[in-house]
Length: 320
Image 1 (cartoon, rainbow, N blue to C red):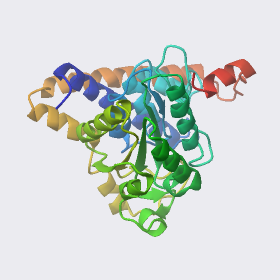
Image 2 (tube, rainbow, N blue to C red; image 1 turned 120 degrees about the vertical axis):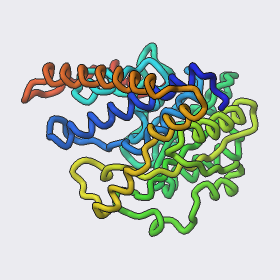
Image 3 (cartoon, rainbow, N blue to C red; image 1 turned 45 degrees about the horizontal axis):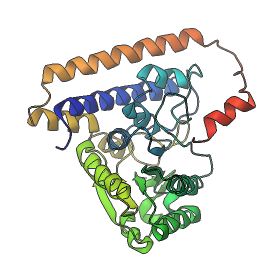
């Protein structure tokens, strides 16, 4: 383990907390309290692990699955904010907010945000910065032309980038095996002139090791890396969309828990005791429960959101 004991315990706190927050948000959508959510349950270790591998001045473009976990792990984004943002009572994890680590938002058209991150990496190079740009996308987006073009240009220019594809096996309802000829998306990296790495997305320590190596490689000028992270999502594609998997398949999807995997690894290494892990879990649970109560109390049963001014909208949209 390359991280100190203190940082490993901080990683566990970030993973446990963001997992519990995501569970609460997902449940609130199922109850009809909130509406419209792409649950990130099952993807938590990806965002947390990469968040611990980058610097605050590195530009990271999150995904709709692990974006909240990533923002929380990087710092400056509390569990309270994560929950309240779903009620429209706090800024989301996707915008560039003063005081937070550098973030580039995504857009609604699948995969089209990836070239934006290439532009950031090119601009930072011109500015003489030693920063790294990291962008996330799913296995469905991996088949979009814009994503291919972005990775090809990044490879040709040897840009300081890391491409993270979260492969959960489905693009909405399209199985990965029916949409893509290759068994491993990481194998495509050869065509872009960069290394490709396949890693278990339920193992935060393994993801962190791979991400740290890719970030270090990019920072020293050796070029980009494509990381394929294999996970199984716990929920349907989005709230309100039926999942084609059977009840048995859904139960199997929940069999592997990234929080439990990290907890057992840290306990085995003598870094985290069961009692301390329970304390951390309880502390996170209390913060989340209070935020849910605050969100419910502050949200009228019928209301329209206050529109942002053009200045505020611009500030939230673009990386600086």
